[in-house]
Amino acid sequence: MSHPRISVFPKCYFDELVRGERSYVGWIHDAATLGGEGVEHYDEFFPSYEESDVAAVMDAMRETGQISSMLCFSPDFTHPDPDERLRQVERQKKAIDLSVRIGAQYCRTLSGQKYPGLSIAEGVARAAECIKQSSRPQYPHPPSLRDGSPSPASKRYGIHGFWLWVARRYPSRVAARRFHPYRMVLGPGGL
Image (cartoon, rainbow, N blue to C red):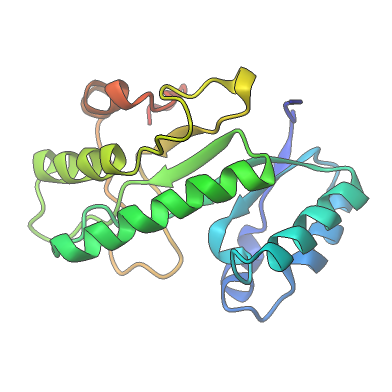
């Protein structure tokens, strides 16, 4: 599997793509003119996870000679409602499966929102538990890039376009200690 040196992500069209007001297949064609080698996908850019919708995106990727560098995913693992967190775990499992289908090596995941009154310790505990529950038994854990399994990667902060609260940001030392058993990818900026 090749590794792109430069990948593109349509941040300026994020809301339009999520709402379906802009064609993701059309954007894939536009992305090919930007000089990148790979595309960072976002799960909600796909109209659905149905085979026809995923195939249309992958056909455009092949036609333009681009590869999938990662799938970005924004579950809300810190949500106060435990039932909602379970729903987010199921979404994460589907996102990992989508990563495999599109040939992405990474499923980059936000940890959740920084809800008022949520301590760092509780936020880390909730996110770690959800990540653990999201493990996909059909893909060897820890994933090996040699066998094509996606590596889960966590971003310790970020802003999802539709969240009310900024995503929870954890100190690198806390996140690395807590998430390392789940083989989260540690980059130079922490998680």
